[in-house]
Amino acid sequence: MSRKLQPGRLVAATHNKGKVVELKDLFEPLGFEVVSAGDLDLDEPEETEFTFTGNALIKARAAAKATGAPALSDDSGIAVTALGGMPGVNTADWAGYPRDFYKAMQKVETALQDIKAEDRSAKFVCCLAVVWPDGHEMTFEGESHGTLTWPPRGKMGFGFDPVFVPVGRTITFAELDPAEKHAMSHRADAFKKLQAALL
Ligand code: IMP
Image (cartoon, rainbow, N blue to C red; front, side, top):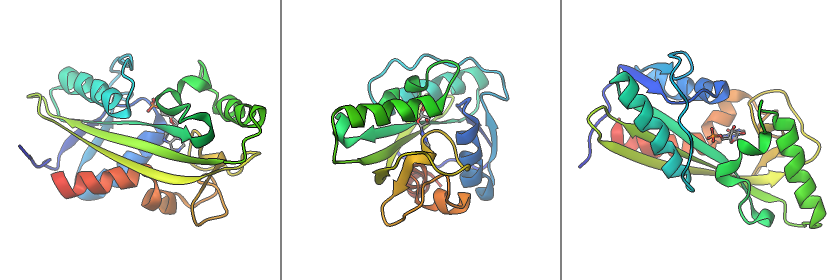
């Protein structure tokens, strides 16, 4: 059964500041007050599923339960064709702890060089999940296609943005104006589907 998401308080079930900025940019113009799980000091649940959708649901369910408000989560990552889709759902883990995304990008580059990969294509994937306090839930998946460059370029964005050159462009996501990235990203693609169904 479909349901609309009423403008008001929306808990962004993430501690990732880069994602919070992008989610605020997408939802706040539509009348939502986006408060992050990090700001509310909520626990970060363990992401034990093997799909973006599964992990997005774990995060949104935990935040909806803890706050009694509708929760929005984002599970995302980069899937590299020549690496059989890795790091995929484990993208954040490749950065170790504390997170070091230069290390993660380097690890991907080393893996590509080790197999002398000619195919440097990759896609970002994003699953947005919305869970209401009464247990109703919806998920939306988006993708953004491109190629990986080395060395990293650009200072904007977060995570793997400095090595990702979207299709049709010659600059990386980290060199693009944030508004342009937000219009063409995997998150924007998932958001368009969410918007069509829930807003
Ligand atoms: P998780 O969804 O919290 O498990 O982490 C996803 C990871 O994928 C992030 O920490 C980033 O490294 C990467 N990622 C997801 N979306 C983006 C993006 O828009 N740009 C760059 N990296 C991203």
